[in-house]
Length: 102
Image (cartoon, rainbow, N blue to C red; front, side, top):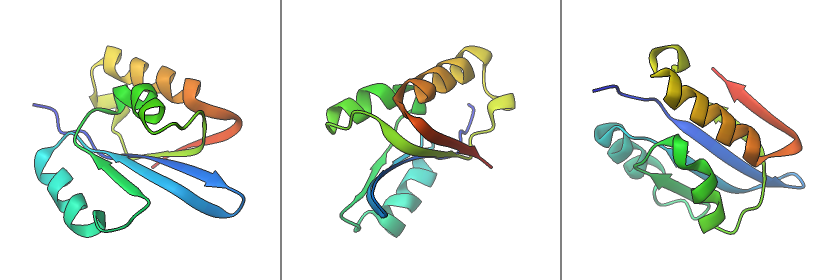
């Protein structure tokens, strides 16, 4: 089973971060994130694939996002998974939004 890394969505209004949404499909990593950041009121941690980014932001009434930060190993993912994540990421970014990978 592939173990994907984290992808974060950061919604910024002016200079303040309103929301930080973390996707992590690896159950162990997810639990670590919940323990570290689950108490923060503007952090949402999800145990699901970043492929669902469009549905997730819609659920939280977020139209578009300013930044997406990703540590996903795109080269190691199945091509169709990478393509879906990249397409959906592009669809939810604001016109001058940034997609940052590391």
